[in-house]
Amino acid sequence: MCTLRVKGAAESTMRPRAKKRDRTETAFTAYLDLADTAADWGREFERQLQVCSLTTNEFRLLLLLYWNGPMSVSRAAEARNCGVHNILPTIKGMAAQGFLQRQLVRRAPVEMRASKVPKARRQQPRIGRKIWVLSLTLKGEERLEDALWLQTKRAKARMRILTMRQQKTLSALCRKLREPSWGAAWRFLREMRMKDTDEELLLMSRAEREAMRGLSVGECVT
Image (cartoon, rainbow, N blue to C red; front, side):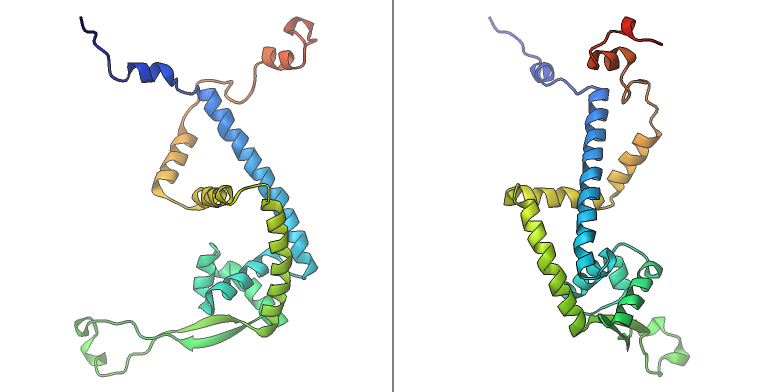
């Protein structure tokens, strides 16, 4: 005698789906923990930079040029995930302090097929457009080295509670939360437009709140 087994029936009973309220509370708790940690570490990060008379934006720009070498203003703004008009005040302030220098250079002309160029201009020499290129000065490198020494010591002390594997996982998770993608954007919009039928997704009922306080609903004075 043989018995028929429905495929997936056992798995569905062994692994029940999380309730909507549990998923909401888990996501919101992780969101708050991440926001609190980022705010706490951000304040500590800024206090350490104040010792070297640097702001966060100035330090990140110096570090960007130190790691990647000279680069254009537009490329630096793209690497910092901001617009050119947002990074210009930082560049002007650091140039005035002598931490970096700006140089106007001409880019190589873009390669184009002859058929794409008007006949009247085919015999003329083609030139590229001018751009501003940023580079570190000796004073900027010295100031960055002083700030890096303080920041790396603080980072190693903070991260000592995590293993190297956990640190790599944490870094990957943070990058995943920051990186834009169509899938993440679609899931975000779908969640924001979804109507929650359960009114107690985040707010506990009165009975649950009084139970946590050790009181019953009847003992509560309205």
